Image (cartoon, rainbow over all chains, first blue to last red; front, side, top):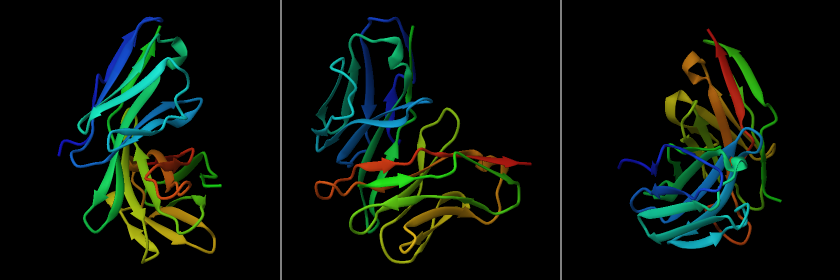
Length: 116
Length: 116
């Protein structure tokens, strides 16, 4: 498996523009998580899905943020309109049960977002 | 409350010496614990996990972790540090609130610096 795939890897945009981040989880995983990492706040969980259904979005900072998971192999995180304080690295992670080994969660490489 | 604490922001060790990165946890019920490593400009990589059984868990890159129930700790260890082990290390615990979920609660991270 190629692991968790995220695109784009880097995004530079101007304040007020819409930004869409994409994620393809590991095949067979039933959990998907969106995190944000900054120097100031560390690693923050924004939202997570189980079987494509949003379970907890309490970490989504504002209504400007939205996430969808239309099917088991794709999720998006959208910011509209973007602001400079949204600049961060956004990680997608997927989780699932490994044979005889319990649950494991794997992270994608991240999208580095810069809003100017 | 469910939580994880990494008491050291940074750990410095000389190459070839043993290393320990500390983690303590607070959960209801039996803990489900993880260690992740993050190299610069990369996503978090799964190192190892503890579910049950042997208190000494072996993981990737020669790392191991010792589960201590009485001290509620799960310290990461390696007998001989390499310069290439320099990275940010995160401890995490599975959130048990609201029933069994696969959401992980992460510590704030410990920066490991191995000097040649």
